[in-house]
Image (cartoon, rainbow, N blue to C red; front, side, top):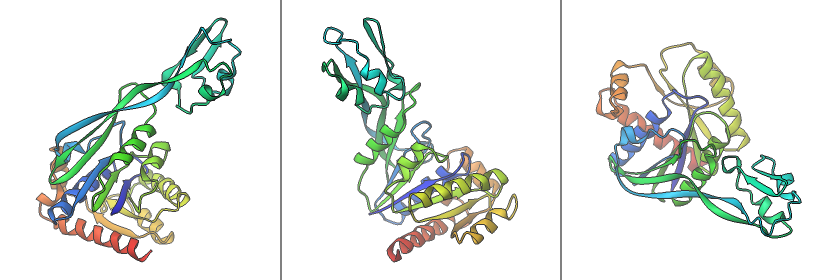
Length: 284
């Protein structure tokens, strides 16, 4: 199994466009491919792969529930909570579920065993098939703030296909690290603009800290300036693919279309991208 994550230092670089089109291209070549959308706060891979959904499962986290008849209101639970998700006031204990990080500290420290843990739904995982690609996405419920639990769960249940492509959220925060961690290779999608380069540097720092092999895809490669290319050359970072600005691509994107459906040989270029990554992992 080849498990590759597609990430970017910022939004709007074309990360999902590369991820979904790569998945569809490899499936068309006859490979067993899974696409996993871990951008759980705003998943949009379904727009392009258009899967027929076959199932859905709830994702829940455990939060504290206090038995006030057992509680002596000493307050150890509140003292141990770094996120102020539980507060002791006079003869009452208040729990703030949206602040809870599900560490279980309050449950384990309570001397009276007055705290139990109960499930609380924070989102769902949907699965199906589109463009002959096994599709899976996580969706965080509106108003929730803890994305990593859904990402951890989706990575537990995702299909063990010949090729697994994980579409990570943009940025370099905890949800991104959770998505790319333990993958075989990371594709960083960037664009040749000052903001794109700045955030690419942050993303490079992240994957290097995680000790993950990676390469860069430069989208809209013929706009902007040469500083992204110069940075990659100076840092000895492989540029895996360049996608020039193309009105047909923009029009297809606006309709939720796929790159290989248009002239320009993008299907073969994406397949060559996969072969390059497979070769790099094999020789690592």
